[in-house]
Image (cartoon, rainbow, N blue to C red):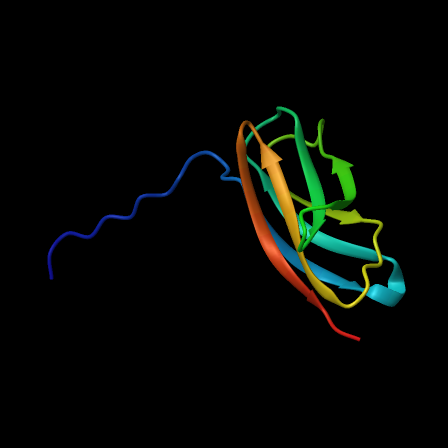
Length: 97
């Protein structure tokens, strides 16, 4: 079949995904992968762009971390956004009643 190669990144890539959370619990948990040791933050933003919660991730270092935001948003559409070194990624969250 021929030669096959796979490129595996050697550095962590910025990433975010929601792992749990319920409005009644008062916290939303995320798996956040940081690309390095520099300053980073996690925000919860509503549909109009208002920041509802923020967490400083400085000092966590490169790699995957489980972090939470103390937020109990009302039903609606939100975005959790991780930012580091001029890059941002977001994941959409739909809260139902």
